[in-house]
Length: 118
Image 1 (cartoon, helix red, strand yellow):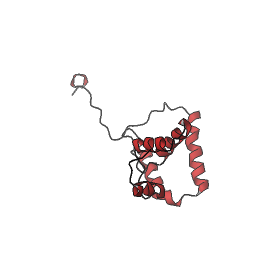
Image 2: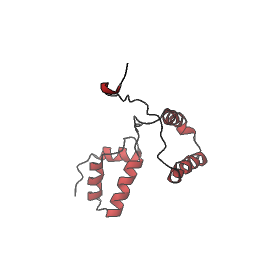
Image 3: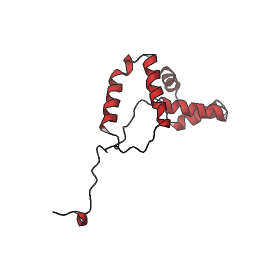
Image 4: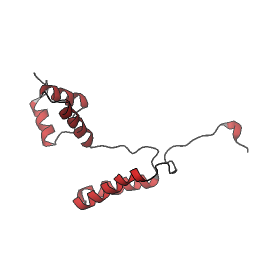
């Protein structure tokens, strides 16, 4: 079964010189390689984990923006131990209530004219 992909493109993906492929390309690769459902799912999980660009939600707090900025500037200098600690802290969110109100940054919520006194 032909993949209809350039050999140079597949090679660039393997070497990491090309960004992650689209989910459709992953599906074609899985079909051509006759991967099992588990292998196909693992390939899609690897695709999600290999994103190069992330968008911070517009509802994120200023602290989240600061954290993302600090991480971005230090990513290539983090040790394996530091990465494990950060991942452990993120995993702790399961035991902490997620209903904490935080101020919304980047979005203005306008009130109707009827309820405002001047």
